[in-house]
Every structure is written in C-alpha cells, then in structure tokens.
Image (cartoon, rainbow, N blue to C red; front, side, top):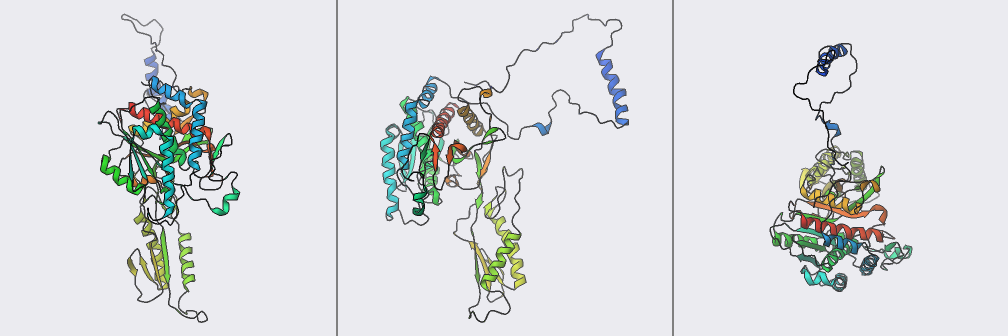
Length: 515
C-alpha cells in the first residue's frame, strides 16, 4: 500500500479561464501578447545595452541545477496490513520493553571477549564462552530456533535461514557479531556499574557489548521472535549471519561465513545486507540518519631500518644511527601527508595516514611511500626495499625496508548505490520508524544521507554477496555512550527503536517486488 507524503501539501484542482469561441477584442483593450513582444523586442535590448543587472528569467519547467538535491529524499515507507499493525502494537507495549531490556541485559552478562592473540578453536579455552552465549540464545528465542534453520560454521559462526514462500525473490541478509572488545582489568573499578552486569538503571542498560554489537544482534532476534509469535510467514527469505570475532578482524567468523553464504546462495544473490554502522545524529536543527555505503581501506606499514653493528662509543661517521634514520623517515612522512579531499567519485571525507579513501587504493598509498622514502634514501645513500622490491641498492647497510606489517592490507569497500530500490526501501523504512505514523510537522525533520565508515566491519567478508551493503544502527547518538571504553551503555528506548526498525525492514522487504 502506498503512503501519501506528509511533507507535500494536498494537491488541489487548478482552474484556468477558457477562451470561448467567438471571443472578440474589446475596443481599447491591449493584448497581453503585444505587451510581451514589445518588452522582448524593445525594452530588453535597451536594458542590456546600458548594462542593467537583470534578474534571472525562469521559463515554465526550468530547473536550476544548483537547486537539485544531491541527496534526494523518499517518503516514509510503512508496512501494510493488520498483522504489521498488530506487531507494532506489541513493540510499543510496556511488556515488550521489559522483555527487550531483560534479553539484552542477560546477553551482556556473558563475557564474549575476543583478544588480539587467540589460539585455535577447540584448543584455546577463551573461545568456549561462545558455547554459553549460544545456549542462552537457544533458550531465550525458542520460536526463532523452532522455525528457522540454524547452520553453524567453524563451530561458533551462526547462520539462520528463514525460508520464504517465493523463491524468485532475492533474500535479505541481516548481520551482527557475538563478540566484544575486552575489558581492561585495571579499569573495572572505574565503571559506574560492573562491565558484565547488564545493569538497568531505569534508563540505560550498562555493560560491555550493550551497544557494540549485542544490541544489534538481540534486536534482530527480538524482531523475528515477535513476528513469529504473530504468525508472520515471509514471502522473501531472510538470512541472519552472526560472526564471533569481528573485533579482531573477523577471520574465523565472517571470514568463513562469507564463502559459505556465497556457495549456498550464489554471488550477488542477496537483495540487500544490513550490518552494524553509523546511526542518527542531530545537526543544524534536524536529524540525519547516515547509513554507510562504503568503508575505507587500510594498510599498516612496517618500517625496518638496519645499520652496521659497532660500539656505542664509536658512532658511524658517514651516516646516521638507526634511530636517526628512523626519525628522519617519520619527519618526512609527517611533512608530506596525503591531503584530505572530497570528490564526486568519493561520497564522503578522505582519511590520512593508513586509512585509504574510497577513491584511492592500497597501491596508491604504497606509491606515496615509495616516492618520499626513495628520495630520502638517495640523499642518504641508503638501500631501500619497498614491499619486497629493491628500489635502491647500495650493496651495504644501512637499509630501509617497508612492508605490510600483518599481511592484512584491505582495499576500500565497493560503494553501494544510493539510486537503487534497496537504498530507497532502507531510507523509507528509517523515516517511517522515526515518524511512527505521526505527521512530519509534529516531529523534528529527519533526512537520510549516505556516509562512509572509517573503521571496518564484518561486511569486508561479504562483498561478493550483494552490491547493496548498508552499515547502519537505527540508534540516536544520544542513546548510546562509550563504545569500546569504560561505561558503555545504551538507552532502553533506543534498543526498542532498533527492534522496530528491523521489524519494519523485514516487513517492507517482504512486500517489495522491486528489490
């Protein structure tokens, strides 16, 4: 069912005078067309001749290109039908609010930390906490585990398949991750409430992972559990993918889930994908929802400086010490950083250092280093090796060598289109979730604008699944605080808003035949 836009006034029939047959010119009456012709042929040339500044004349149908929206907005998109209305009533109830708070609080109490250095799954006991977490999910969401087919990948990766009745419709993919960053033991006493307490103070749920990313994961499951309890059965297949090591690059989790999903469903066979990302921020008297349509790449460059040995009391005569050379390299890089920029091919800000803009590449950053450091090495008569290639060979030490520190170089993510039906559906769903049936004049305006993530999510492993990847948490920035640090928390009303968003998204996607 289409929605009328509350932003547009109701159209009214226009009336125009009709010139009747046999109409005649009254004596002494000057025709309007004669006035116009006199103005065009005589007055305008005279004004141009004496250099009078003329106002811009806009003919009917003229559109100033400078006034066109670079971020065109869509109308709120509400799911139709009594079932949708019933589900929304449930989500708005006090009983459901209590249920949602208890569900997230219990999830936070399970310390699913991942660390930079972890042993193999099955050998390192640090992974075993995910057994506990997944048992909690099974007991807390019985309808999900009854009606959806669960496939485990690499022991702890979770894929839920909710088969739709129409196989001709591409499925949607909703993603989240089970793990959290660690809590530094030396900071535990600095928390207002213990980091693994999941404490609810009447406004906020506190604890590590309360926002990143257990709020997203629990919101998805709460949404589907509620839909199932209302006897909803989808036409379009819905797939859930929950990794378990996103905070340490997702190699074991999403790194295995991505290939499995591609093998199961095919390349570019998902209508859209929504994972964690940017939320809603207030600026200039309006609210802006900013789903990220891309992520920057990155490259950690390791710089090694090798020098001849010797005694500290006899410093080298013809070149700097190793510390001196390294200091010179750092100074050179600081004095010639990559300039931040905005371009039409790049939808948002460029980033300096080793975050790679969406219109750049890993090789472009490597070239930047090559140019700067080869010049330095030439002046200092130093051997220079760049990413395995010897660019300057002096035959002896000292030597500068730069390389990919961890072998984890990442190109910028493909940019998801914003002129697609997927982005329009996402945008309409965001606006509808915020308006909640109210007229736009009754609430602060909200606009949907594309953004770019500086950091990276599990979506780096899902590029082959769809062109329509959106990183978005339906959460106001004022409803959350302190992600990855002391006193992480989420406002309960913000959590309910996330559940409402996923519910609307599933229902809208199910009704759409244009995805």
